[in-house]
Image 1 (cartoon, rainbow over the protein chains, first blue to last red):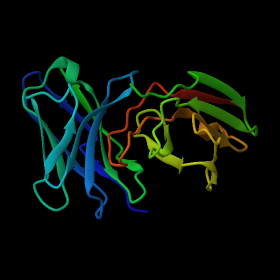
Image 2 (image 1 turned 135 degrees about the horizontal axis):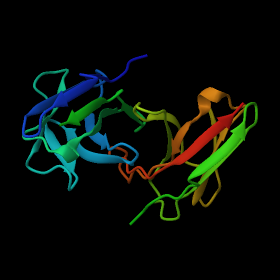
Image 3 (image 1 turned 180 degrees about the horizontal axis):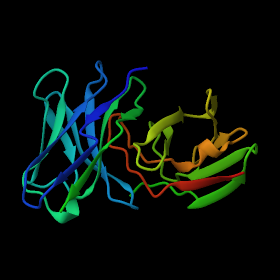
Image 4 (image 1 turned 135 degrees about the vertical axis):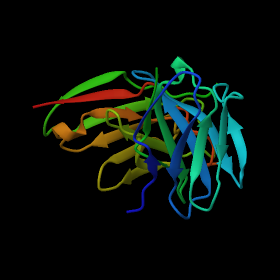
Amino acid sequence: EPEVTQTPSHQVTQMGQEVILRCVPISNHLYFYWYRQILGQKVEFLVSFYNNEISEKSEIFDDQFSVERPDGSNFTLKIRSTKLEDSAMYFCASLGDTYEQYFGPGTRLTVT
Amino acid sequence: LAKTTQPISMDSYEGQEVNITCSHNNIATNDYITWYQQFPSQGPRFIIQGYKTKVTNEVASLFIPADRKSSTLSLPRVSLSDTAVYYCPFSGSGGYQKVTFGIGTKLQVIP
């Protein structure tokens, strides 16, 4: 069964550093998403992406965040200057044929 | 603002059937009803989706009344591995919209 993959599984970085989280969505999917989940809290939407551009973004997705699909398979989330409050699990998802979203296993980002 | 409401937690013994009900009073005509499951430190996993009446797959059944203002996820004969958080999130019309998760229902299966 095809699945969404994410790398790395755990990323530790210092405050102010840039991080890039990587995702490989399911190959024939066209809509992609990033969500995050702070420990003990809800899964929160960050951004959706279709046809090489952002479809929708949340208030969380400020100028420090960017997304890119640099090639036909990868989908990346960049945080330019990380803050302590960016520590969370980050999930990538892609949209299936019947509008269900397939989530990856997540990247645990720890900002120190 | 459209949203869904479900119990915060439920306990069940192994082998029992578990029913989790979600209310979605403001559901739009085009919206499908989708349930997800999440284990600790993992991403949400799609379980089942329906529009009306009953849908069954290898994991669960989904019951949707005619007015579609609620839905019930039914897990037959739960095991310890079904301990997880279950969500009936709001997805919005269009199918490709973001999924808005609430806090879900934390199901604890007891031996």
